[in-house]
Image (cartoon, rainbow, N blue to C red; front, side, top):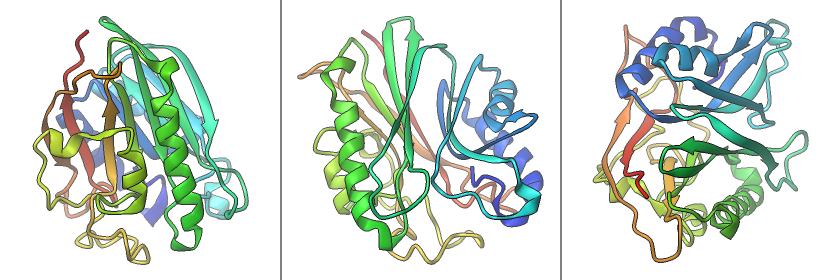
Length: 259
């Protein structure tokens, strides 16, 4: 969502909401989303999409800029869903290199008609100097999703800006226990979610630029189960009124959720 970075977040907001409305998701993970004294961006998204549930949790990644105009505005991750959560929890991720509050995972158990649906929303470290943290976070996230306590009739979903390129070691750690739904859903192998065509793209993220680093991953609800996905595509990958909605493109995948 690119939080309130860039100085034009109010101008970007209608485009962000429009892109998400066009995608019409049932489950939506938000990264770099905000909360202020009046509410959360997740609540605004849920209202626009006609979805009844929005959960926001603050996280330390990325750090909030030291700017008086942004005082009191929190950085967070969020989940917007068609099905209400029956339980949520927040789990800190390993951080031995970066000081300050750590990154977190939001784990929500949704009340899906076919059974409990476990969804994990996360963002991982991105700065090259914190590579050890990013690697540890990838392993930790994979282990959380693979926990047998989450077994059930439905897949376990992991959504987020994982700062993991498809050929990188973080993705290798994640896909030891999770499937990448992009190729499974027929997504373009050359797709990038952090593209240098976006003027605001963080070019200092040299190893991540022009790669697909935002993901929807999953595992079957039980060992030996089958995952089915289709229609993997990008959203928000074109300017709206001359401006890209965010510095990242969104990932959309149709996942079969049946018991």
